[in-house]
Length: 413
Image 1 (cartoon, rainbow, N blue to C red):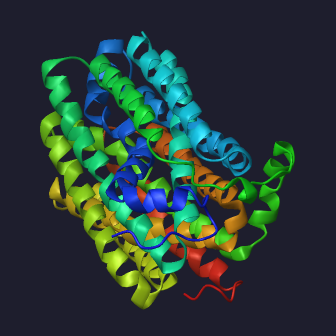
Image 2 (cartoon, one colour):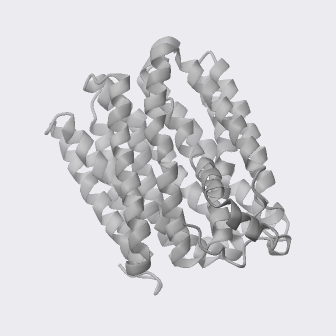
């Protein structure tokens, strides 16, 4: 499963240690990358119950997702340069401590505004795990092997959103929504303990010595690379659609179509199965067809699925399954868009893997802020707001990759 690590990424002492750990390393990296999903997916079935318990509207509870995305998007821009200077493991540990504090704050909060505040703290910590796990993959692997490993990690970490709503629904059946956040506290503490069983992946002689302020301002240089910009745009628009799905589906399924919280977890899990399957296919095909070709196919598929969803959401065509099936197809495009866009962006500047990973993630989750906020702002009791936002995101992903690929010889549409 694990081929030779890239020779430029890690210490001589760490490289053989990683080879010996194998699946153990994969599990830790997948857990770190899964924090973005589990932090939200676990409490999705509880959102209507939270609204009732706190006397809040559905739209205001959806802002707890937007608040999380604000912290997640901004925080990545700080953790990336920090890790390029000080290594990966210490910043991840600091982020996990913040995540535990934020999760406990959510569990103790007595109002939606308080939850939004603590969700921002939670996200500032969780984003360190995600952005630096991507950089650690680049430390360890290169080329098509890096894309294969990223797809494999995403297949493994897809268990988090698959189990998240299912576990959250079961917790809600025997307890209240606050227990869900206490579970996140326990997950954060367990991951922190596991982190220190794996070695540092960024060698001291590979770390950047420039001041952090200069590294932060250096993002402008990265954005002037049209290839990096193309990958960021394609992945960013798509993530916007995925977070519109996350924000809108609980109310589209549970409130509008009267699906139980437990059944919602199963329907949500169906889409995650599609994500896992597509990532496995991508891992098998990327060496043969290339990441750009598969990325192009993924963006076109996402655009088509989004348009079909919008028609169904507007007209009611197909009822519940008129939403479930297009959402399954849209979510499955994750397997061809996310891993390929991230790996190719990182490959452009391996010397600044942390900063590039942060920039990619900030754009993705920044789009998530806008899309989830739009779903909440235009909430009208129907699936339509979710439908048109996802359709716009799919079209934006396909169009941005096509338009920007015209400016770079490295990208072919």
